[in-house]
Image (tube, rainbow, N blue to C red):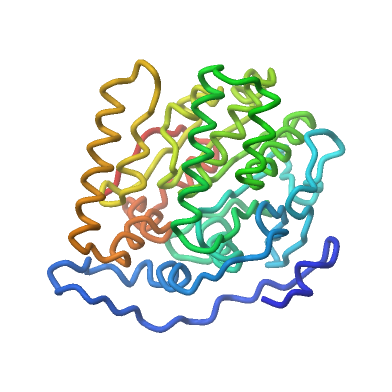
Length: 341
């Protein structure tokens, strides 16, 4: 991407469709390769070609319009948790709703654009359409997937300290924002929207789930748990956060659509809530983590892991009788837990 795109204030940029990527190749025997792996080829190729992004993109907030334009609202570290709202009226629907998508680890911002176009603005045949601008909060790619994973692990550790009131809130906020600037962006944009009386539809994938759960937990500790309960809904796709991480922050269970593949280690591990008295869940977390570690030591192909983890696969498997179940939730229907094969 050209540097000039991201250095001008509130610049409008046409988000051109992603060019076709070459067919993926895998090194495993045919019996080890999912027959439908082509579903997620765009996501796999994007992950494999990811390069580290500059700091000002790690937590950037932008509007992705229905006309496929990108309007930068705030760069990393520029948001504040007070009005006036950064999200413009052009991104608020007639019912007062804003839609915010917090993406996963180690992908460049162009891949987040593709996902928004495909799955939230109706470009993909299996996608949904929110029929309004989507606010993108970009996690930002670090030096490697390992570096990004460690960052999310640190954020989750701080989340547990905040959940259990083990550290002062002000100190924890400062530390969390240093660890992951995108959490500050999520916190501030959700807080602004709640202060403005808007409904907030959050969409999270992978590490974006951990960032969102952490931001909501900080807001709940700040006294906004009732507003979260009344105004916030969450679509969680293979999030690195448990369903209970969202409900403990105030989100009603019926306002959470929690989905992911049992073949995806992120979903399989992090669906287990970690808490001081949740022994059974902690055991499940540990068992799944050990199983995944063992499979990786045996040489499990990362492309297969990415396949089951991708938004492409998740949306495809949430189709039922030709209709998209996620669309019904985004239209205001009830949520639930929807594990996938």
